[in-house]
Length: 279
Ligand code: PXL
Image 1 (cartoon, rainbow, N blue to C red):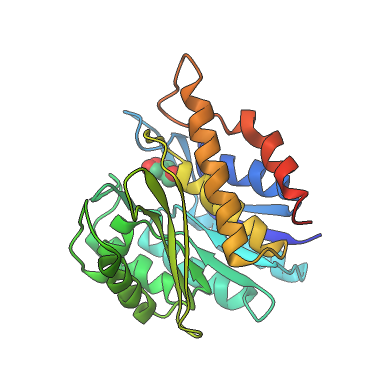
Image 2 (image 1 turned 30 degrees about the vertical axis):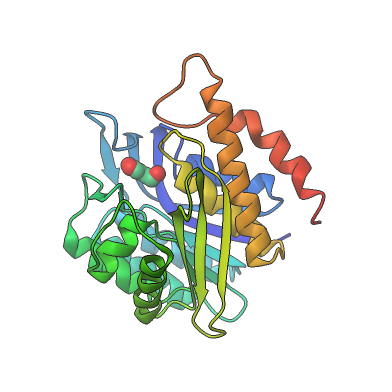
């Protein structure tokens, strides 16, 4: 069985980061090893959340794993808490990385033109340096702009996305994918560039007009699970984008419409059933 290490926080309530990655990567048929960067009472869109930083635990935990000679088929990073954690994660990439280990970085820090409350522009630059070590990066447009000092635009054309991709690629990652790219009215999806082959990969699906927390984590978790299971990048991103859209649609049918996260539990069986086409 393939094994993915995911490094991100545990938000106890709020369905994002580790509490999404663990069930979804497992559902993709891949063992999920977690390295929690912090424990929060909720994600940071709730008022009054508590945080227990776990920076001092990262090295002892991974030192133990080194002694166990553990191998990861992929290392997937999401929300990291601090500059120091980014540095430690770079060391983890060096220690556990290699030809057979895909480094997948989702530089979670911003959306809709704004940084999340815990972050500043200096942090964005550090995230850019983490991206430079990756095989695949999946920033949204806002994160791509913060990492490349580009102007954030709500409405844009394909050239704007290609220009962002070229600046992202210059950071050093092998393949850069921008998420939440809408090329026409009512559509959204991913637009990627492979620095080595010069090829673009584009997938667009129906845009569901609602925005929930944690959907980026759902997309990344399913994508990395699919890639590790051997799907082509196009297929992995298609499965992930379609699943994310299906889950947002499903959440809208919930009369409570939970604002803090999506009802991925309801759509999990459909994700698993859809995979039989590929495996
Ligand atoms: O979904 C991204 C995310 C993960 N973890 C925490 C967050 C957020 C987004 O705000 O606050 C703690």
